Length: 299
Ligand code: ADP
Ligand code: MG
Image 1 (cartoon, protein in one colour):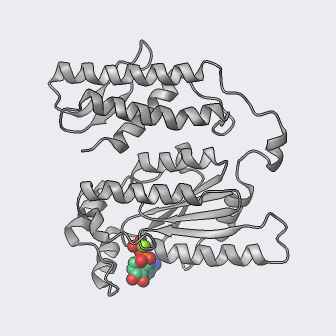
Image 2 (cartoon, rainbow, N blue to C red):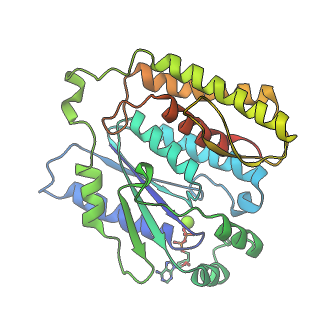
């Protein structure tokens, strides 16, 4: 039904907001004036998955933790569920992947940005007595790496912001997003499913292969120093990508490509489209693959 992605600094009050939100949603779903489908509210968090705060101490342990969260998320997504993901969700590429998964399940989406100042987060982290504090240097590190959500990009919108000074979450806005937000009407199953362009599968395969070649060529030319580079995928498609500061091997790239193609092939064959637009153009595939690589290549 819907995916509500919380995002915010570590110790900014996300879990507190998740509890408020869950209580409001459950109350409205049980209210006699509610005439919609029967829904359950599910909250997922690092704590509920027993992921320790120390997982964020270094990127080697952080990736599998994020992977576990993503898998759990996909398992819970469905037509009968409002899923609240109470985690930092601080990487743009990760939020993008959540959004793509939600679209594949035909869910409505909404991002709730939980805002507190860095000083307050540090203070609340230090004051915590439930053993769920971050190590101070991990907290500093996460504050620096945090990638703020933006209402300008489709995967973060609608974006609803809650400030630390606010007593409660803006439930009317969130309720509207999860119950009326932009998704195909419930009878979409009986309508003709818009077909992705017949050459979409070809573009997917071809563009991701070209992008792998462009990365290998770029590495050969620069000596594999990594960092931000511009790739030449075709005459018109020249995406920027931030590569890890090391040499990326061809077999690693091919594995990434296979995973990426498998995931999106499914979406194409099912005829899934994002917000009505059938966009399997070269540029769009390249943009998606770049986001996927930035998120999944080991540092
Ligand atoms: P997160 O889930 O983002 O790590 P929590 O919801 O667990 O954050 O809150 C972290 C700590 O900060 C808790 O001890 C909580 O009581 C406190 N806290 C959260 N939000 C506020 C607020 N708006 N004002 C005062 N204290 C807060
Ligand atoms: Mg929390």
